[in-house]
Length: 201
Image (spheres, rainbow, N blue to C red):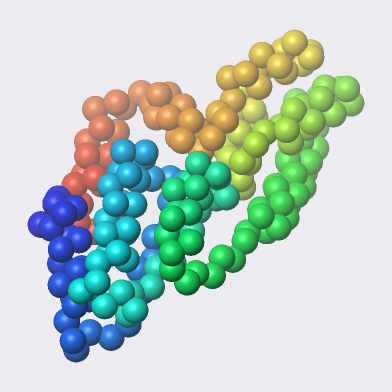
């Protein structure tokens, strides 16, 4: 059952139709992390629920969270125009988080500069380049500086630029680099397989 998306949606539909069922709130978090092929199926099922007359969709509410990417938000235009909805914009918070991550970058650059004995010019250039990275997060900053502290890069503008070119541009790339460096490939594969197959964390 857990491997059949269609069966799970049917279970949900039947639960909503139950006269004894109270209000149902569906929380779909981080839609921007959903694979494109899976997102299409998800949207199809969500639209089917809202457009079906016999589901009693008045009891059904959705809480959707995602980054404000137009390619994601545009997929919801039809539903937003057809049904009552409340949008809580997070763009202002995103900008605040970006500024806070910039403070983390500045502090870590100061620490890295003392450890690596970087010149003021190289220090300033590295800070500027890291702060230009889009969608930077606290975890991304942690992984990047962990890499920079261990990497013996050339302390020149070209050396810094060459090192930046190898830095992960997203969390997924950061994790991929970590896994690629492991020397215990069979053990890592086995551990990840167990995690994927586990019914609970």
